[in-house]
Image (cartoon, rainbow, N blue to C red; front, side, top):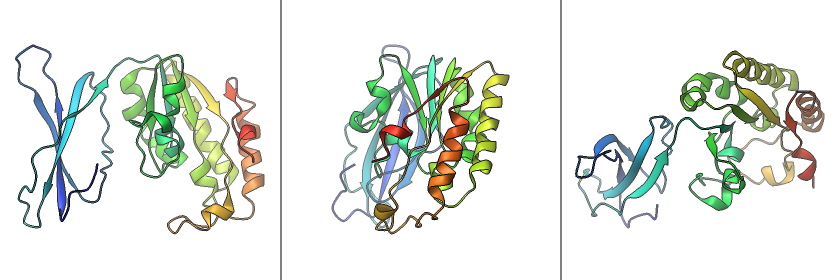
Length: 231
């Protein structure tokens, strides 16, 4: 959102619309944050129509503004295809850009509906941990999996990353979901060195990337996106 002048914090309310005309909408969450964005990491899996609104608060917690106009979103379940990943799935890899911005949300370019289950900053082990909560709630037939870049750029070994990718593959198999892996994207160490909150990748990142992608391309269903991004 656009920051409000001299605001100390913000109150964000998330509501679920009533199924009936004239019915009462239901307050789902009352959240508080600062800055100009809030990352609601709990997720929404209950089908329906929702909206959120926000107001600015002063240092004593008193309202400084009216409530904003509501921003609507819809949750549909089941969905035939879902995408599990990190910020590259969540919002195109752009800093603080959520999937509501179509320019950064690659799922919007697809000819079939895809549920965005990306979570910025995720490691592959995080994706394993939230599989049951975030994936199974939407009962996808196909799960696109893109993960590992946050692992290898911080020095994790290729085989530890592959182990967790295999865990995801096996979780999919146990629930009758078809996993479609996409190769791990390359990075630009020169640019990363100029970003203050990201550590400089180890010199072995290229060989680690190749080992991961060799494993991915041997899976029954895999898409090579890395080769298009190597420049």
